[in-house]
Image 1 (cartoon, rainbow, N blue to C red):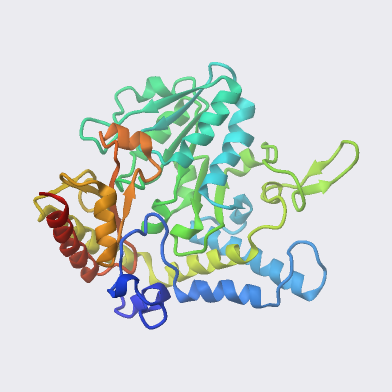
Image 2 (cartoon, rainbow, N blue to C red):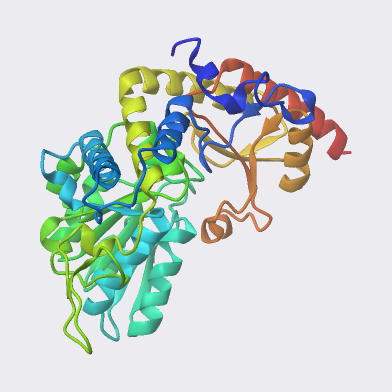
Amino acid sequence: MNANLRAQFPSLNPASNPQPHGVRLAFLDSAASALKPQAVIDAHSRVLSGPYANIHRGLYHNSATTTAAYEAARAQVAFFLGLPVGGENSLVFTRNTTEAINLVAHSFAKPRLKPGGAIVLTELEHHANIVPWQMVAAATGAVIRVIPLAADRHSLDLSNAEALLRGATVLALTHMSNVLGVRPPLTHLVPLAKRLGVAVLLDGSQAAVHGPINLTELAKLGVDFWCMTGHKLYGPTGVGLLWGRPELLATMPPYQGGGDMIEQVKLPTGTTFAAPPARFEAGTPAIAEAIALGAAAGWVQQHGWAAIQAHEQAMAVQLSAALADLGFIEVYSPPHTGIAAFNVRGAHPADVATLLDQQGVAVRSGHHCAMPLMSALGLPQGCLRASIGIYTTAADLTQLAQALIKAQRLLVP
């Protein structure tokens, strides 16, 4: 990657953003939320600076201009995700992945579930792809079936997958694990689910950051819904999106009611709703955030996936090597995924993370919003996680290794 790329992130610039504890910042928590390049910050600021107005409502210049920018962002993201012209109408702006999954759970799955029905998940899932399905199952009398981890503790045991999917309504699974960095075998699971009449939702929050996503190809494979959040793709918080097959979105009732999702409102009853995507975007949306998400997609495209992936793969190899060279580290993720889950033997992950922070190294500790996975891994206290981004450098990974050596000396007798 361009040597000046790190300078595009104000959070990493000591001149504009004093570093914690007065030492260089090695930010290795991009899997939780990525830092923002100046181009995205500027795009967000430009919306709020004007000409600004609410969208889809006014006939005056500011409203029309902001509306056009909002819908242009939808088209930009659609192009980024491999949809054809017109495909943007199958993209719904949401607050985040969590809201997108809740939308599908309540608007698509809930009307189709009956007592004894089933939803299939995996042990790799983030809580956002577990709890909404548990709520809908409890409300309908359906059950949750789980595809477990295999004996290697980072792939899925597919030996009973067909039996688990038979008679189910939805298979909801991660496109890329936020803890281990592994990807489920979609070319096996998705066609199997479709052959059995099961709808498929993919949580694309991590996958969208590390390589090109082609929703047209995923639709051909059999995926019915795909979602992501903006803040992991170098974009702002408070905005994400849901893609759904147009024919399915057209049959789904609105998830929330209010302004901008109506066709006509009548009293006491008789209100009708707009076509998708407006049907699922009730109220004033995150206007500036959606436009900035479009800018983030454009910024990634500008740098090019080939260069990004080559850089990230080099950093992933170095991260795995750095941890492997430390004899006191237990690593739970397979090598070279760019997301390393690990612990220091004999030390609590929270204590290690605190000492790393004092040395300028930012990693995540705890359960990573994946308690069932931590249980399957036998980690009741959770673990540490180091994750790379487009701005990660070899110096960051050297700093991590040196900080771990010092933390181990201080914590382990």
